[in-house]
Image (cartoon, one colour):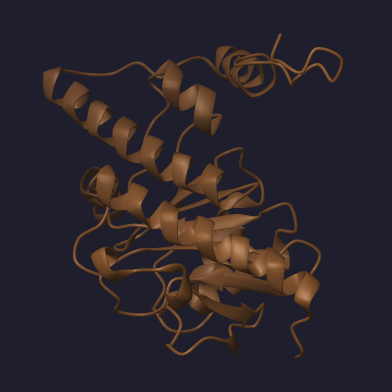
Length: 235
């Protein structure tokens, strides 16, 4: 396809954002070596940008980030796309509300995935961010859209922006790439805390009604309100 100058400006900005967001994965120790990836949907187009395969995080620049269509085909870039590209593309095709996808092999979340066990909602932070237990997705081989299918099937009826793909690791989604990275950071944090809690004894799951109340408050009340256009500041 032809990338017009208008689309090109948007893509260039997304490439910068996605390259910068990969630094958050190393900052929070969610990945090692070249594992893991962040992608972002190009708004209004059947396109996405994603990390190329096997590139060191320390060497990653916006010019390395590749442009693909939503079937995983390379559209623009000099490097081969991530081996998870087909999975990301499948998510974008079937979850139009998703603007960003992240995959890591963060230690504690991946340990839960290795056990094939959901992370139970025993913390208000889990209720706030994930709206309930963090679910387990099916085992799927890497390389085609099988992982994407498992992600969509698992998250379609869930409030969670994270799924622990069995024997693999966490995938997270968000309205944009930054939100998906935040979910990746949060899922590792609660995976670690709940694991430690279980070493101390049994844990009580929060009641469903309280989970819903916590989730709704966090999603709709917590944080700053949008800026007042008249005053130009947060209220």
